[in-house]
Structure formats: structure tokens, C-alpha cells
Image (cartoon, rainbow, N blue to C red; front, side, top):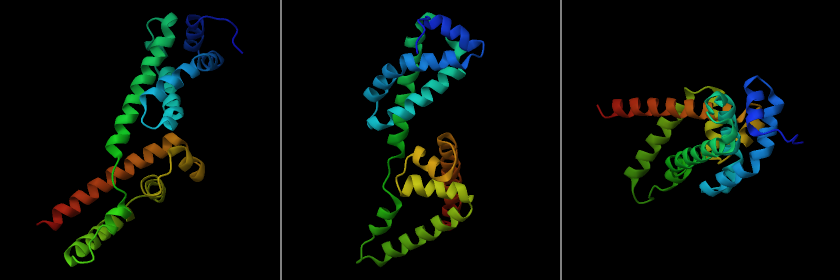
Length: 186
């Protein structure tokens, strides 16, 4: 229910800690934010996540909104930037799944099979050093292709927590694999 208050009045109320005012801003601008996000993304289904992240950023940075009457423009800039960052992140992440790399070995090349077996061993060893939750998130996201919302529901955590566990797990895997590769080349 929109009570006719201007964005500036609602922003002032949010700055005083009124969460209902922020809910009104979300309802008022969600459709436009979603349209902007969809237009910027390669996968339109990611627009919900981008909008959620953008609204959280807007709430966290509400004091940075210099012109409360221009809240809509300020918010849509956050949405555009969030969508752009999300799209770039997805492109960087786009890789061949691990199981595809394993099955790519030629049956006529025993050296390729040996290298792949060695790589499988290193990956398994590196995964043993992750926490159970990090390992589950990594497998569900990277191998099974689940989205963070699905992982969150399955594991009883938030989507943001899923993202953090995935980031930490990948970082640990990179560190572990780069050190084992460096040791193997000595």
C-alpha cells in the first residue's frame, strides 16, 4: 500500500530506521529495478538475485543518497552496476565442468589418462581440506549447476552465506592446487 509520500520523505524515514518506509520504496521501484536488471543480464532469471542485492546495497548506503527526491535514479544506477558486476562474474566463472575435463581424455593417449588421474587425485585431496559445508556448496554450485537460492534452501543457509562459502572454498582450492602443482614441478 503506497500512502502517496514522496521518495524524499520515505528516504528520510528509512534514515531514521523505519523499515516500513524501505518496504514502500522497494514496492514502488521493484518493477523498474527488475526491468533494468533483466536488460543487462545474459540470463534474465538472475534479475531477482541482482535486484535483491541492489536493494540491500541501497539500504546499506541510504545515507549516500545525496538527492532523496532522485532516489529512483540513484537506485537504478545501483541496479545497473550490480547487474554489470554479476554478468562479469558469471563470464569469469564460465568454465568447463570438471567431469567434462575428466572424460575428455583420449583412450589412445595413456599419458593424458595418467595426467587426468593425477589431477583427479589432486582435486580430491584439495577438497578434503574444505569444511563439509564448503565442499557441499562447491559441488552443488560448480558440479551440479545449482543456484545459490537452491543451495540455501537445501542446506538451510542464506543465499549470501552460500556465496561466501563458495568464494572461500574456491580460494582454498586455488591455493591448495597451486601449491601442489608447484611442489610437483620441483
